[in-house]
Length: 337
Image (tube, rainbow, N blue to C red):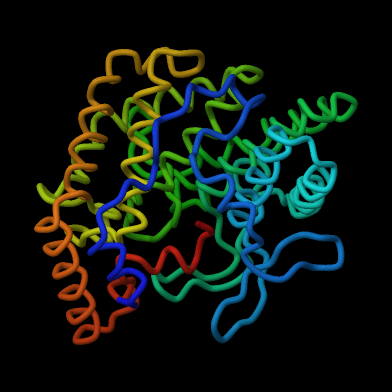
């Protein structure tokens, strides 16, 4: 763990601030409280203005999650200040999303990662529920921003939905039965069940639910799964990053605080708009947010988490199998913040 992560453990703080009011299904700001940070370019740009991510050994790559998150950050700040440069930046990422869409299993559109991820492992091209969901969030907001293009953009958002029905084993992003699905950020042969990527995917479905009944059904199924399984990520002193490949490993400080923010936002959204079905789970999410934030602010819990991550890394070095070498915070290298 680097010095920056160590400082995050030693200095108490609150990553999230107050939870926002629920966005009105894709018209308003993205619900995650990180817009200013997201809008910092994660790497170089291509000639069209689309952002790239640099990865060790393979160089700059298009990462659909990074591009979608950068677009959402630019959109949020554009809503605040109306600067046309931010609108153009948002459009540059949108145009890449439109160009990059490819047909995949189930007949839907996919936004693939065209590089290997050796940490899980995943071979290119590989899909991601988080990419599908955040691309949907971009497309729905773009439809509000450019009404003359709204039909085509909303059709593209709807075309992203079949991936959520297709099992991972068949090239999609779902594990588990249809009535208890988990939408996988990393579609590994053995389920990884990463929490933050699943929640980001749900928010994309929530953005599309107003115009597509299938998105509303997928969202309702996913909300039920989240309510049933969110507490599984509680270690009693910290949160897990995942319950599959990384079971029992503490999340990094960054992702622990993402979990706090996501539970706060779920509590704020539950019972409103597309999230009406989650009304009875509002207190569950609020309680998890409070509890996990207490872990973050407790020096003993932070120290236990640091020790757990260090132990997991030592174990991974002794057992360097491809499916076990993923450290608790390497996801920060293979997805945008």
